[in-house]
Image 1 (cartoon, rainbow, N blue to C red):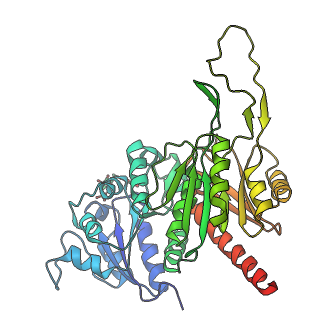
Image 2 (cartoon, rainbow, N blue to C red):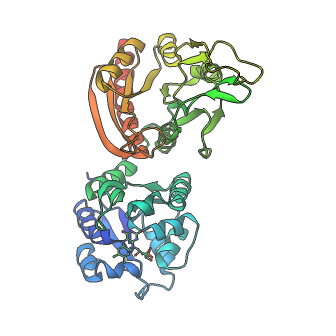
Image 3 (cartoon, rainbow, N blue to C red):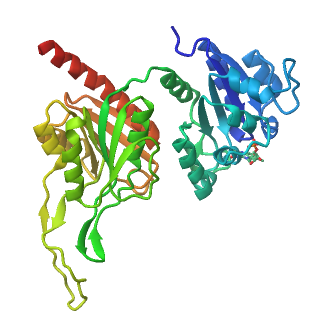
Length: 408
Ligand SMILES: Cc1cc2nc3c(=O)[nH]c(=O)nc-3n(C[C@H](O)[C@H](O)[C@H](O)COP(=O)(O)O)c2cc1C
């Protein structure tokens, strides 16, 4: 049985140079057994023809000019008909409109009237993608449970290189299939830590790191979408609270440790994405350090490793850690996995030049499991990486659970 067989899929097409790729998407979705209809914005007609899309979908293309033979409420009919609505390609213009609830043409009105799963596949120039307004729309859309697929990194038609390329048809279909698949983490209790910690030195200074919390928040969001019960402990970040996810905010590594200890007994899976300070100052100075001498020496001491102590004290909890390394990625990460006795480690190189890792929306990671099974995930959005990590956790966690039930 094909997952998308007999599903009604509405493809929205907007005015991007990548609009021709919608033809391939429609054709491949048809091969998956889906019923496909296309709805075009006015400007998309400059990039792809109605005839092409009608021939491939086998259905009349809907645009501002089409007259429905069934009713005058085209936008409502289409919103009801579609099991899945995918906008591919989605221009910056359209994405910003949808994020702000604008409904000034047929496609945006369908989006407003549609109450099922909406997928957006952005395609735009790298500057348009990194534009702050576009990025705030991305955040808003994701918070409203709208899935954004891609974009990819690469060379654009305009000659620029960067993120913003429409991702491949295969990847889009994989995401739609994933969504149609069951809520694989239904009812499983996750405890997730995210973001940096701050270790105060004096009333105005602290020591911290570049963690933005984006990876941990992405994992929390996707775990919830897959049906998990998520409890998030967040260090200081600039990210908005995720709707429907219980979140506790902490500042120092000691605070993080205390809340983990308080919550861990309820968890089945513990994912430590937080970049917790390894060291804290031995002494906190109640008054501000003065610049009276040329040198200042502050003594630090190691704090206990939260992930390691959870793995030791709660062997039944599936434990996952992250290792951001600057060299010898696999060796260092594997060493961490084994010495901490955890179930899985996600390794990544902290690489500022390629806009990956800390602070970025993208990452490139390697998942290493206890049995040293290695899975590499090429440069992708953190939200997509989160999905891959959770799928892997799901697979391994259920194998372990089955095994321990058998032995009980
Ligand atoms: C040659 C050309 C290529 C374009 N490609 C893109 C694109 O890939 N992504 C994008 O966001 N806008 C692109 N634009 C700009 C959009 O077409 C423009 O914002 C338009 O108003 C979008 O309308 P729509 O969102 O209603 O389809 C392009 C414009 C031109 C002239």
